[in-house]
Length: 199
Image 1: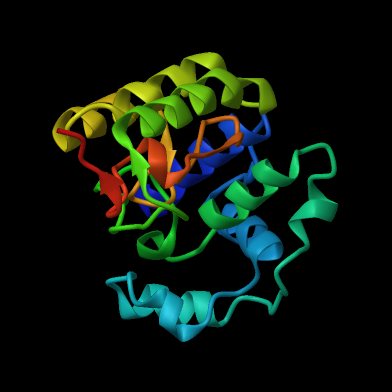
Image 2: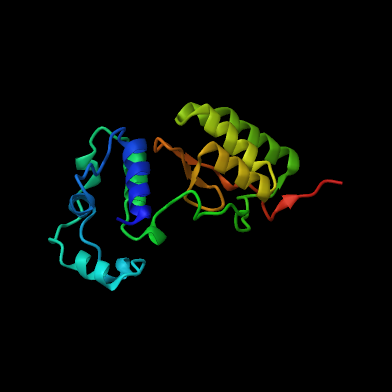
């Protein structure tokens, strides 16, 4: 079986469900379990397979429709289910992973009204003081704050070492390995285009 699929099964199954998600007896059984959950992939999703024989084999598997993840995993939070759905995609090139999304600055944005640097600083402090109280782990919030305040190279190293899964490369949407979602407003990541420069 493809090493990426085995790694995928281990990462997703062990981290998100605390047990193997596809406990197949062998690679044939494991592939059947995968397709029973996520459905049989279309031809566009098979492009990563280098072997024509492998593509033919997958095409001849029984037809399964993708299961409703919220029904299959009723004890998971909606954010964890959302993350699992983004991770459990047949084609590894379309799968959300830590390594695919590289950190970058947010696109230019404009605050609803011009603000000063002092007002921006106050907004940021208020966000970082309150955000951890709405969910997620404090150490991940601390890592995201450090990344938001760092240059891009250091920010990438911080999120990588903290195990943060970056969905939006500008860090506005991230997850931890347990599936908790972290949303960062642009004002903590960059300055608005209408920042008032005081003399």
